[in-house]
Amino acid sequence: MSTQAKGSFEVTLSPQPPQDGVGDPSVGRMAIHKRFHGDLDGEGNGQMLAVGTAVDGSAGYVAMERVSGSLHGRRGSFALQHSGTLNRGAAQLLVTIVPDSGTDALAGISGQLQIIIDKGEHAYVLDYTLPDQP
Image 1 (cartoon, rainbow, N blue to C red):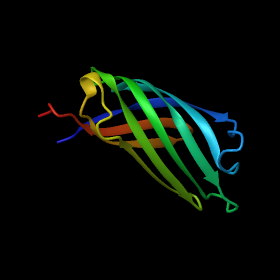
Image 2: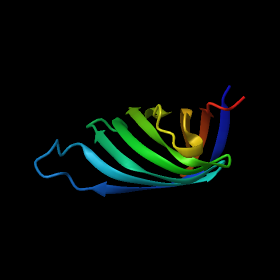
Image 3: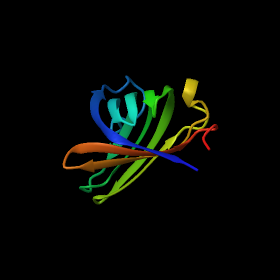
Image 4: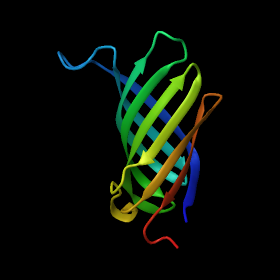
């Protein structure tokens, strides 16, 4: 049985320069910084790779992010893996907790995070389980 955490977050994306002679310059790289509020109180930091296309409203991204803080009062950290596509304006996003990435009181955490963007405001719904939950 899973537990649900809800709240809001702010996100800052900082473009990173391409690495000299490494990779394809059409693949953008950004640093991610998030500040979570609500049932999850903490910060997220990570890296994103993204590709746009010649078709307006089509793109893709992947990201890895480490979240540290307190989740329903339990302190620790865990990693999130993002995979998103935009197909002519239709968005599809999957954000999953990386297996065995939980630390301290969040060791053994698993689940998925839903990101909700409404009128420029960011919110999350995290459905998760921990080994010692009923």
